[in-house]
Length: 312
Image (cartoon, rainbow, N blue to C red; front, side, top):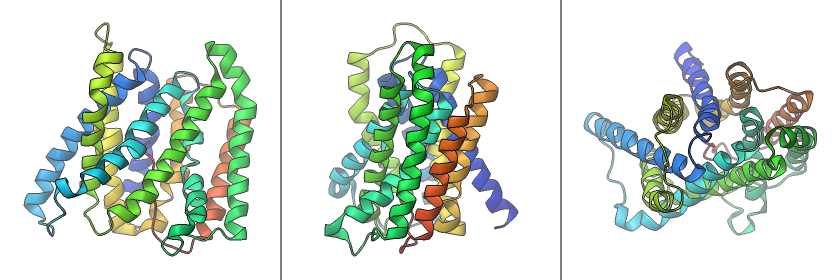
């Protein structure tokens, strides 16, 4: 990898890792629904501007019209944006941002599990070999260690159910896995920026009315919360996705997947330094097992295609 490639890789890990920090700060002053709605609106506007600029410089072959693809865009916006974004924000009301990042790192494990069990599409997905099954067991053992070691402490500190927060982030990771596998088939051959852009647009259109009715802002948030949600939408969502797809084009899926290993480390660092979150032995052991499980599973892959990553 060239110095530029490495810069993109570490930059992507820094942006996605910081997303957990931004969520933790913003969700203190606004509901998860409102936070995610603003995030999607900002990401949509940013990606539309970038898409317009790229279209004038680098014409691409005509893509299917939106009226033909709207059902796919709507579905992926639900399972790859609305559900996981909201659950992670809800979960971070109850758990540390570093804990959420480690649990979210299980997305490749869920993706591999779902791909191995999807018998109807076995030809296009990945067979669940004994080695891959072992990797999944190791990775999910890391999740169990993290939950067993951190749940009680966080619950006492916040007065909310940490276990529910952890389960919410795990369901978000599962949802990312479903969205990644669906997107791999539904948008094959399309410029990657198109489904990424329309995923955010459809998500904003669907979620914003609910947020305005069910959980409107009752006061103007602080500059820290406003800055966090702007950074989350523009940098952590839109720009990070663009860097991700650029990295895929430059170095391929096998090397781009290394961001999976860097992201939770960056998030733990941000949480410890900027939010004064404690990093327990259980968190480090759980992270090590999750990453080991991802390594074993990834090396056993029979396909070089990389499922869509989580945002963060």
